[in-house]
Image (cartoon, rainbow, N blue to C red):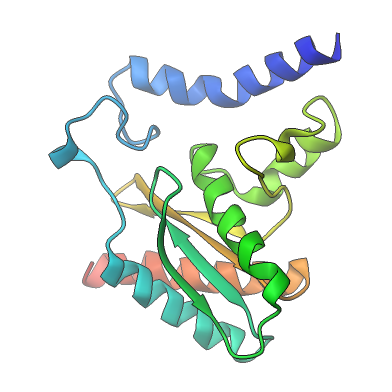
Length: 176
């Protein structure tokens, strides 16, 4: 029975994305069904700029590990600040991956589901993270990647990741 409930919940989480695909809206689906030239993927230059914004914020908070992935969850850029906790390297990458593997969900948004009917979801896909510090990255309403920050408390990680995403959102209006 628990497996059926988990399947239903996961289906509901992903249903809106699949519905968007059926309607021809590629923005919610990482470009699935599109040609390679039509896909929207974060560039290395964008990733490095976002990391710089995260480092700027983290300098006032705590040393962090910062990972940027593309829409498929593959690493594009990574930065480990001096004295950042080494155990958080993998966590930062998994936070970024989690946000894109679930079509743009913040990692913290999966927490409630992981405590209930999706208990154990964090053990799937090579390891997911279901607490704060991972956010999607959008450009022109397309999911182009994800960012994961780890090295401090969850609140510190969230502060740094939100600052970086906010910077990128404002930067895309002017020059990206």
